Image (cartoon, rainbow, N blue to C red; front, side, top):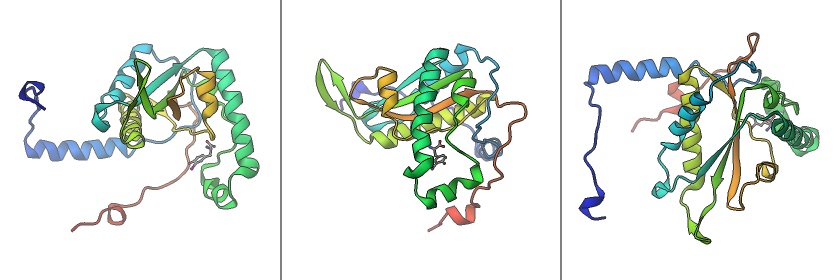
Amino acid sequence: MSEENFVPLHFDYVDIEEVDRRSKAIYDNLRKRKSIREFSSKPVPKSVIDHLIATAGSAPSGANKQPWTFCLISNSDLRAKIREAAEKEEYENYHGRMSDEWIEDLKPFGTDWHKPFIDIAPWIVVMFKKAYDIVDGKKKKNYYVNESAGIAAGFLIMAIHQAGLATLTHTPSPMNFLQKILNRPENERAFLLLPIGYPAEDAKVPNIVKKPLSEILIEY
Ligand code: IYR
């Protein structure tokens, strides 16, 4: 790459004591994040969603290909269609397609095939990953598509929490009905469905714990 492709970095330098304080504050905040399955229908302005999706779109990606599309749904007919199709697949999952071990592993979460949040949360985002791009009718390669989409989803989940809202990473399976209902092109594969909004006032969450640092960190 030639020199003229580079620009000076604008880096907000903070001293290390402040870095330490901030890193602790980030942890204290993010550890309170919970996946929410019971949403309030309380409205959330579109400007908020724009900021959140733009944040997700700022994520790093393989060769900066940004292999993602975020479909935003509030229309109640479309939600009803999505809910019906998602519940149809999930019904099959919970009635034979998932292994006994899987069903057992999900017991602590109390999940089943009902997905009312699709109708209730003020916004539904369906994130698609782009297996490849189509530029002037020609296929163009994308790289590390799953990693890139996963990182962008992580940015989105963090942004939603930091902003003061809640979400759920819902993965109805198989997800190809979303490509059809939302009329997305062949190169786009549904990756995640995320309801965004406030939790219901009486929302309950499973009493689960994260592994301690001693179990997830290995120092060399
Ligand atoms: N997709 C199903 C099942 C499910 C699977 C896993 I792994 C979870 O962590 C939670 C649910 C559902 O949404 O119910």
